[in-house]
Length: 136
Image (cartoon, rainbow, N blue to C red; front, side):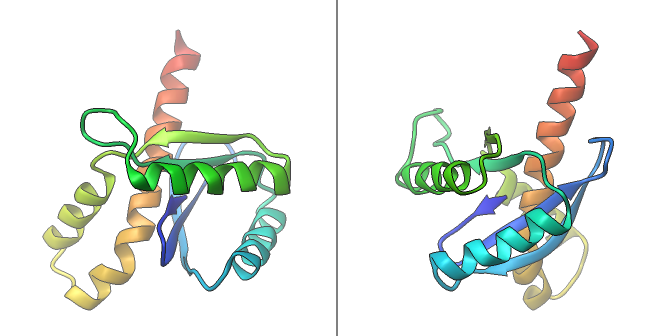
């Protein structure tokens, strides 16, 4: 998940945990509605663990947004009882924007896709790291 104040970018891995694919971006309404949507996705896709992009400053120190994401991650843990991994998301939105700019799609389509692509990049980075750790 790429958690923002207005949208949550969503991605899911294949059953083997090798690749990340984007899902429809969640337009946030309120906490109750957001969690109803997430509950359906968790059930439909049989989610076993969650990866949340953790926004840190370039120095590695927490930012104002870090506290909001941490509270959201704790809410996810309490509500679903699933492991919630906080994954460093520095530069994922920048990288997502660059990829979308280079793809020559319209600005309007880019704006709709950036959160989803950021979520894909966060999850793929997590999956790649996990695969490397397993090989050791």
